Image (cartoon, rainbow, N blue to C red; front, side, top):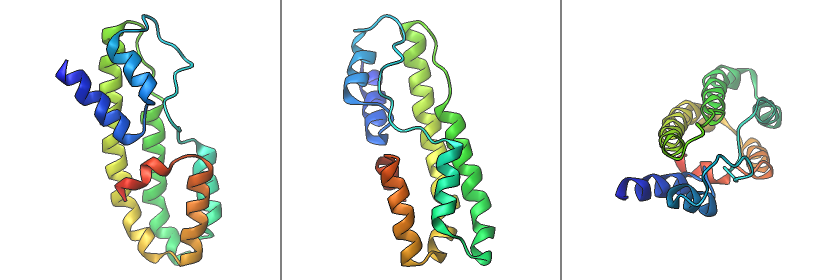
Length: 143
């Protein structure tokens, strides 16, 4: 039981599942995988392209973009992992996904620091607009 609560707390802290979804998952309220459960924003290729476009990177900043893009794509892959059908498998998959997402977010944070240091205030403002528009504010805590 403590593990389920811990996994739920971590998931909620990362913003990867809603409170209702966490409650349902760990209380056993649902017996089949419900695709309507809100799992938070998922990074897509269009989000990555939109962020890059909004940043309007200088030639010097482009060299810092490649690791950031790779980390974002890794996060996107982690978020697309499909869960199993049974309750126990779903809980295992959710715990694994939360841990994997946390690792990908740490990688993203490390990759983004050099780029963030080179951004102008205007570029940072543009990036924040894209991040807010797509609902990724919860991920900003890692930076």
